[in-house]
Length: 282
Image 1 (tube, rainbow, N blue to C red):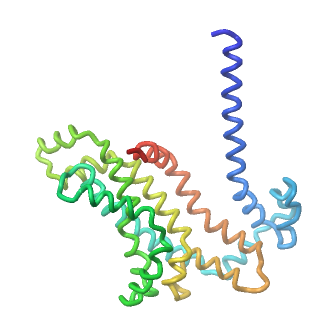
Image 2 (cartoon, rainbow, N blue to C red; image 1 turned 180 degrees about the vertical axis):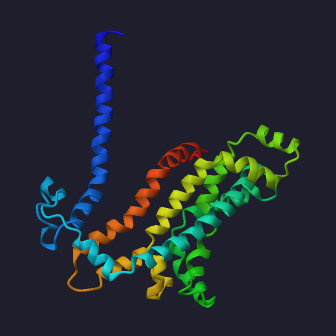
Image 3 (tube, rainbow, N blue to C red; image 1 turned 60 degrees about the horizontal axis):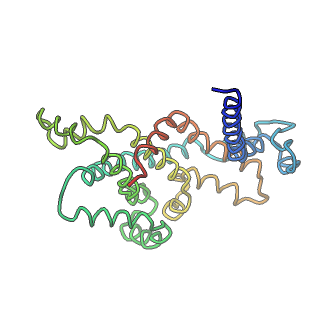
């Protein structure tokens, strides 16, 4: 390799990594600013917004976090949120993966129509069905109950499609070998397919967790009791009291972000592998 080729290769790598670093900083800057603002007194939050000094609190303090924990029962709020999300995740990962496996590996009448129907429903926004769904929950007497938060989100078209796409790549020879060893379809799924599908399960887990952790509108409609508030509903307490203290709001937002960051740090490897392998390919 000539010197000019080595130089060209070095420059291309440098530009690639430098560009990625710049883009990464741009994307993470709102989070960094939020953390810095949560440590500032109210008067300093919007100071020096036109310079990098806004990312560095001059008088850092944890007073804002103390206010958050004094005004909110964060233990109860986290308990409420984790409980209903855990129920959704358990049913989602189990039922939708079984449905996706059936669509990927079994042949039955109406399979193509069902798959087309699932794909079509993926483009329907939640806002389009929110009102009739709320009326249904009200008629069932489920308003202000965990059922209203969990049941409507047990079956998810996107999760079914993700699982189906991943399971399509599971070798049929592996399943035939399991059948020859005496494994039925159920045992094959739970003993053979699930253990080799960690990436897609992790991907669906992360997407579901983030979506429901950040969900505000649906819990706002169906949860009316203060003792049953989720994290996003609890944060709204700081917007309903005048004057609005943005420093406390930033601290509450930082607290709400921590579980997602921890979860993603430990599962990012599986998430990246899952996106690459479950394809969003045809």
